[in-house]
Length: 591
Image (cartoon, rainbow, N blue to C red; front, top):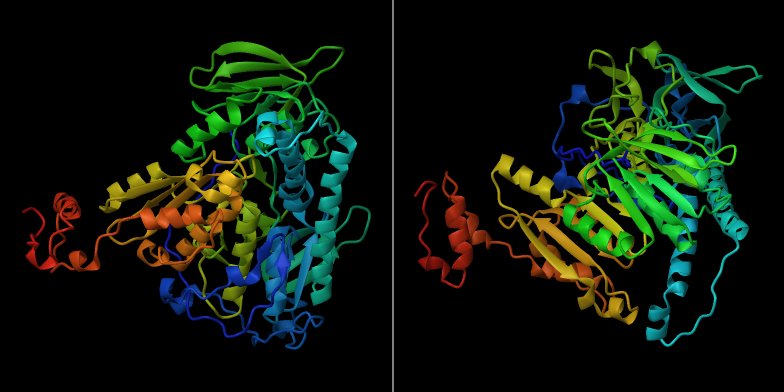
């Protein structure tokens, strides 16, 4: 399917046990702060049978900043308590938390520290998007005049733009490397392969290989751009996001295959720099991974006013790079009938059809693990499953390689969750509480279920849902910025006040979403969070308006002997809330 990766969300209820007493250090990694990820969620936990939990047999102690867990020697004759294969954001987060918990830790990296996010993904792309945001604002003459500003002939230096992205990636990569070295994490250079239980071989081509052992192993090898069959990549005129981030040239006419997060962000960059864009989407609508209402508004704001056209319901069967004076050739076929539709010619084509797990060469066959579409199968605790569906002792997999939720911060959260388990505190990550964002102008962000997903869940489980919305045009700070285009919506249960999902399109939506995601993670109900105070005038009041607009049934009306009242009667109660509670009759279901 030629659309950018969709978010695969686990609907399981998060589990854990009592909190660990050690105090997390204030260490930042790729914009994440550890305290937010290891907070005590005791009211969301339930006990798990002891036989299901793989507990560390080493005593837990807080390591010094240079001891790498050596204050407690590794028992059992292992070289390390923990070996992590892959030094991306997920592996980095797990390594820092492991040392913090007193585990002697090594991380193996065959490329460069930082993985896709830092070197070829979210970090350099945000540098390009920062440029596109400034260019878009400077070119908006009406917007400038409304603020009393005059700007003449804004332009850009392509090489300087590319250098800005590359320099940012280098700086963050250096920060991540130094943070691990400062804590004493051993960084082992080479490609890691599991050669047997608790044993890993690593090395570089042309150099002798080495073997190390560890009580536990975490796979964190990430992903690479997915390129469908029939598409020829030359890295110049037909390229992936890896090549696009180098910004070697700005084509006059660019086709983007896939209209998800990756494609949408690059359309923002290239149109701001002067390109015309054509989207090619296999599904019947653009932005298929978004809440439909948000997607419709996003098309009105981010697509229609710009130099963008699109073809939906079609596959790019074949793409041929430009050569011998001929432009890029794209042969389109109907996504359903597979019949040819047309051939288009463009200056360049960006393939943004999602990402594929990077799991080849890991030696998974040595521990009887078979991948599923390339992904390493895991349970809700990131424990690896073998070909028979049984747990593989002491082996875990986090991040894009397991396919649960292909986001850098999700990988880091999964890694921290694994470390919690290894040090005696059972923990299951609630993936529905993990936010996602698209850094267009304006931004899009989301957490939890879309409205259709929530309605489907309600039908299956027998509860009603409610939806409240608010416009950025009602927000003072947004109006002061002359950025009133935007919408926020919340899906929730009116019977319990549980927040099921929040979706935002508007100024700084990526920053605003975290109040909602933390509320979902902590199990905070609408009727409680609506009393939180927000500074005025700030964009945070967009969320404040959502919370205050939600209507939750009084708890007195939800107390029922044995049987629940019917949905019809609940609706009648909502319409009669002005009546005295004592005068409301209580009927059993069916009456």
